[in-house]
Each structure stands twice: as C-alpha cells, then as structure tokens.
Length: 59
Picture 1 (tube, rainbow, N blue to C red):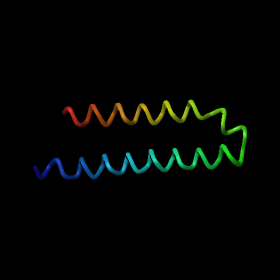
Picture 2 (cartoon, rainbow, N blue to C red):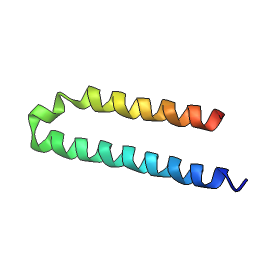
Picture 3 (tube, one colour):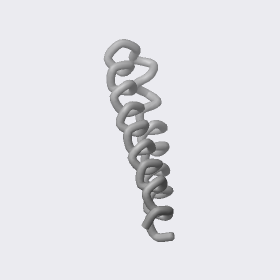
Picture 4 (cartoon, helix red, strand yellow):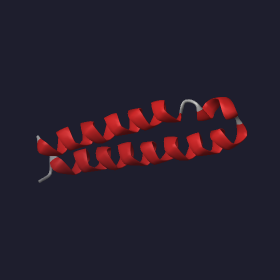
C-alpha cells in the first residue's frame, strides 16, 4: 500500500501535465494557425501518456 502511494501521485502529475499541454495547445491554436497543424501530434503524445499510465496501473 505504501509503495503504491507515490505512483498514484506520479500518475496524477502526468494527467495534470497532459491537461496543461492540451490547454496550451488550444490557446496556441487560437493565437497561431501554424500550431493548429500540430494538434494531431499533440493528441498522439497524450494518447501515448495514457497508454503508459495503463501499463503502470497493470504492474
């Protein structure tokens, strides 16, 4: 139980960072049309983070 607590905090941090990246990408897409072309790239990075989270939860 004790060893799983830091991991859950780590997962929360990763989720928070993902949300932050998503938010900044939305803001940039409004400001800079060039950034809108990288939306798919950012989504794939966030998807990869989710896959990593799932793998960590299985272990």
